[in-house]
Image (cartoon, rainbow, N blue to C red; front, side, top):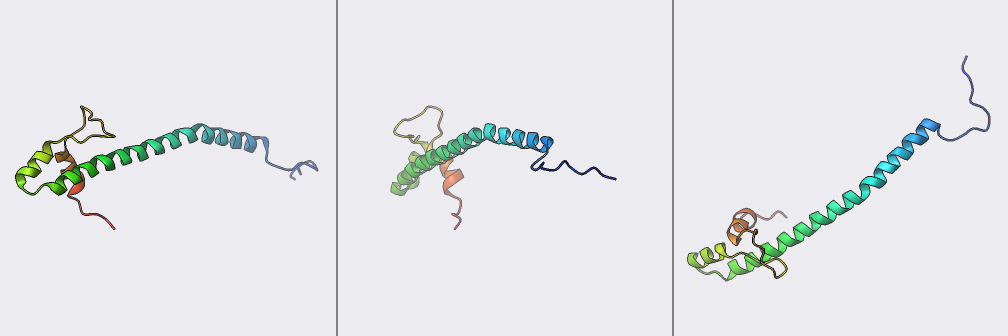
Length: 103
């Protein structure tokens, strides 16, 4: 014989309510972290695109192997500022410019 729930009682049990509140709290706590990370990734992609674009412009004007070697040694600027730890155009060309573009 099973006990029927008291009449008039509806909705989730107390355990289910506690679990839902905990899950909601975790989501609310992690949401700013996820949003911040997404923004940082977009910023990094935009910065890389700017630097690679500057290198591509320089390579477009290079006509000889000597010109290309000079561009390989040039360190591109980011937002008009040259940062000491950034690599020259040469590594960007090898990593990002020689791969075929996907459609």
